[in-house]
Length: 218
Image (cartoon, rainbow, N blue to C red; front, side, top):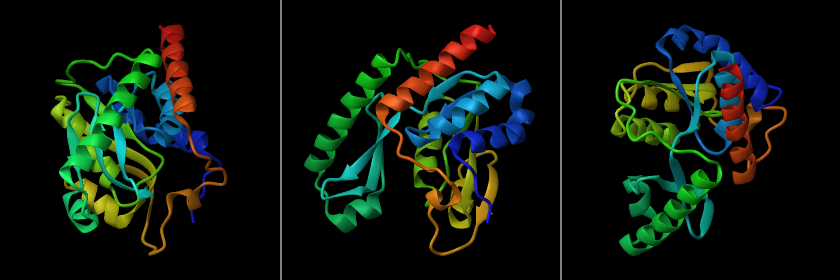
């Protein structure tokens, strides 16, 4: 089984596979929050701008480990409708949760000094996360970037479950995955020796480091 020391090491390995896109002047888009630690070394190696995918997860109130959708910085929603039907979330509950996370995301982007481009028209976006479990998070990121006008969207992860790989592949131009696994009891964290939670504050710091690195390189 492939195992990475930590997210940073995984990002450096991923950068070698992504080097073929360097001529396209890509954006490196990190999925919040764990994806930022992987994306930073990749963006530094590629000398590419680092930005967060502007979306925040929506959690079931009585089961915070379960995500039923995402809200973007513009307030658009990506919702897992079958799951919402199963857990019987009401439209009012969804609106309340989405509004809170939307405001939180906007506040974080402002605090981090990140101004999202109004459009990504004609751009290549390399979307990086620390892994794909079901693929639903990556699918939501892809749809978000397509709505913003990205011309080419390439998901890139250190490890993916084969079902997630198959699902996401139907919605993007190409997938870069260092390892694709077929085991039933699959968890992304099992493929890292060190896999701590990444807080909003840590994610913001890493994004600022990415901005500083770009200014230094320029």
